[in-house]
Length: 226
Ligand code: CA
Image: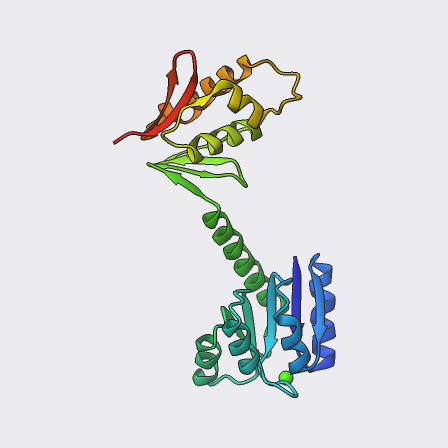
């Protein structure tokens, strides 16, 4: 995880960077507002820690600018002022969280973890494929049907994803084999049958509103049950 820290109080910035690195984060530090902005818009960062009062350009300006550019990187806003309006300002400008100085490093670390977890979850949700009541996340290979959850093997996941993408169409065994196992695979065509069997056992029979039909002599078709 790579963090950007923009803070002009050099001793504080360096101390924070040191602690963050000790917690296995990569950290880039900038002590100046404009420099901070130039780097914040690079989208290489997983999270930005941004001080409010900075030379050349203040934190709220930076925040407005990066949100205007469509950059959604989570931002923790640091403010020395405890006034409610300052905190509201930060959140209004697009900060995800804020900390009032002085704060404990434990608290900063906890906020960072919380935001990174949320980001991770958002990414998973984006990558989720939904058909009927079946939710499949290719990146984690997790299948969820109502309360039931199961983890597929890599090949099972590829096969399910391909069937879902071609929902309603008949796919020949050969086509599935070439797509998932590859032309040069040592496996036999019959492996497709085994994997379809596994998918039915792990997914279809668990109350899924989909079925995988066998089309005799040709192959398979995934369809949504209505
Ligand atoms: Ca400052």
